[in-house]
Amino acid sequence: MNRVALILAAGISSLVVAPAVQAADLIVDEPAEVGVVDVSGNWAGAYVGVFAGYGWGTYDDNGPAGPDNGLGGGLVGLTAGYNFAVTDGIVAGVVADVAWSDISYGYDFPGVEFDFRADWVGSLRGKLGFDGGLFLPYLTAGLAVAGTSAFYDDGFFLVDESQTHVGWTVGAGLEVAVADNLSIDMLYRYSDYGDVTYGGVTAPPYDASFTTHQITAGLNWRF
Image 1: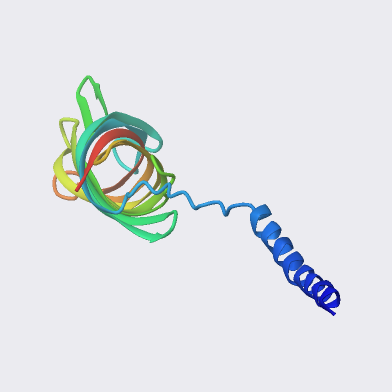
Image 2: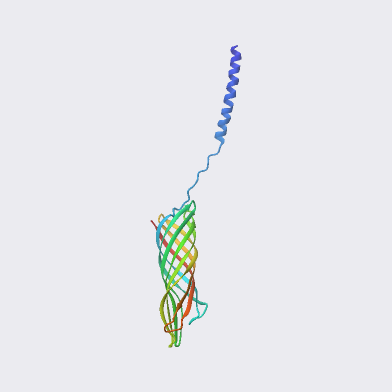
């Protein structure tokens, strides 16, 4: 009788222990879950910056210069903006900038002088970028504004006035973090500053417009 009880006990033990061992094997053999690595560059927040660059493009009028005149010059300016973290990896923002400009076109012939100059240029833009950790590639678009001066003198007609052009701009850029709160910002923009009427008092009125390509590089401080 004792022998039968021992046999039954051994059988029951094998039925209980074997599945437990198999279960333990399954738990041990299961690979560890790979953790999620946070590569966010923490681009959200306010920032200010300085930049410099070069602009070139086309000046057109139906007056003293005519169509398709090449213009160009340097620019130096200030920028301020704010970025928002929309979702993981997506950054949106708003940015404003203003720059002193030497972008101009002109000619000086015997008895005739003409000069057109964008004395300053500015913009108010939206931004949408990808948070790549140390890198923030982005697209931008918005309002473009320029303060200009025009001078024309042929001994008979005279134009000497300042105007404000309002248009639009679109571009793409890349920010690269070089410290916790410092980044290098490289930007290309195309801007169309629209038509404005010049003259009309001491010279016949004429419409003038200009477009530019701008390449700039600057430093942004986040806080």
